[in-house]
Image (tube, rainbow, N blue to C red; front, side, top):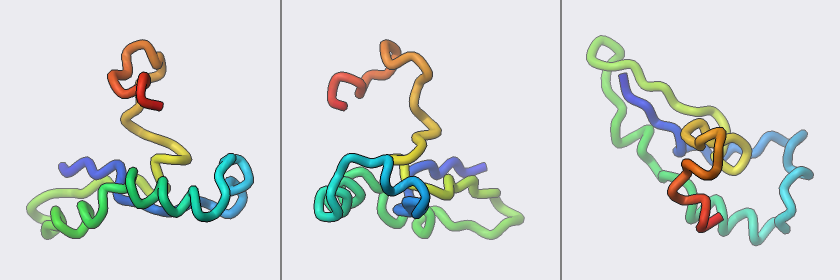
Length: 78
């Protein structure tokens, strides 16, 4: 099983207004926080491994984020 949580750049239209970034700032954040092409780099045939790719950007939901930010090493960086 391949866990690929941060390759999506999808921001659902109904959630766009919840982000306090203008369009240029959002483009920049997506550029720096997306794990570009990891879904393609690690694409394997289904009989070798199953890829679990998160369908939306980590700016909407980060599936690897701790529930308690005190446990999250990157919380101090935002």
